[in-house]
Length: 198
Image (cartoon, rainbow, N blue to C red; front, top):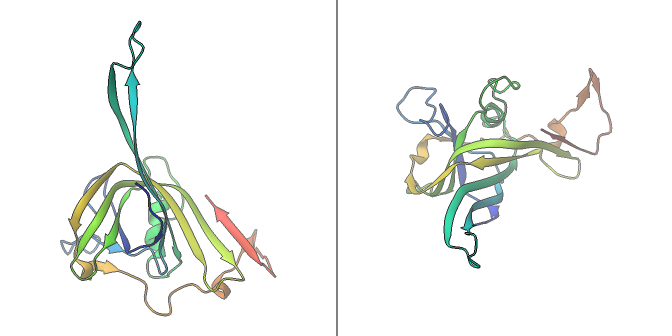
């Protein structure tokens, strides 16, 4: 299954791999976040390879075994001061500041969110970040980021409370002139494009 383009997305961080969702304000409702404005799904694939089993002396396969499920999803959005910190918490497993020993931070992506009724078409569980980039281009009006994930499971027909989703607010999207690149304490001037990939 695949799809791309603009999407109604939100996410929540997991306490443990495919475990309960974080509730930082302890109000009994998980903390949901939008990725940012202009969210796009770059990739949304769910593959399950079928392994053919053969026996000596038999020309055709005698059985088929369903292989493991491989899910991949990629998201691109505008950097928002309101929700980008949560994205960084997801990418960097040391409280959003760097990497530390141990497991990667996992989360869930909710795709096809109906913000009126609260239904969700697809819930992607155990999403683990594999690639992250932040992109600056002086020809674009905003600074964007992209994240790619592998995911472990998928559920359908989930519902969430749309009022509990934190999203970007006006004036907090990062414009192109809000970006600065410093290398060893020196600011790079006259920058036209740059991408930081991890």
